[in-house]
Image (cartoon, rainbow, N blue to C red):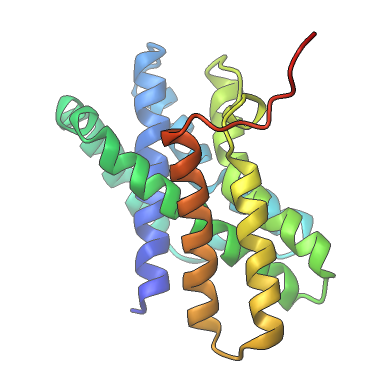
Length: 201
């Protein structure tokens, strides 16, 4: 089991927990919460795979993703208060998750022969569309449409990865640097309240 796969599972767990906690706060029952957790965790990757014609979609060929979502459901209900105390840690893993999902989605799209601009778009879809679906279903304004820098961090990470692939043959190192780019931009933007919001006159 390689480190990329482990990070992918951890990212799926964190995304699922964030979706389930959102559903609990919105007074969903356990069935509704499990559905929200699932679409948050695998919705982006599912949409990407369908768009690029890769079926069955990724999580359908590996039951570990479903078991991870089940684990997230149990953890969210049994340890909700403890998890909420770890918001900073959850934010950190969520940020790593969007960085990882961006690069994995980009790589998968390139592997089917699509052009780099499309690959970057699919990387962003992989990272953020699960959260968009979660927010829409729970009647929230999606984070990507608010002032926070979110998808833009994924875009920067994707561009860095494509640039590094042209000058370095060490894909693992390229992935790490690109993921770190997403993490740093996302972290600094939240810490310093950066945004791309245009001033309104």
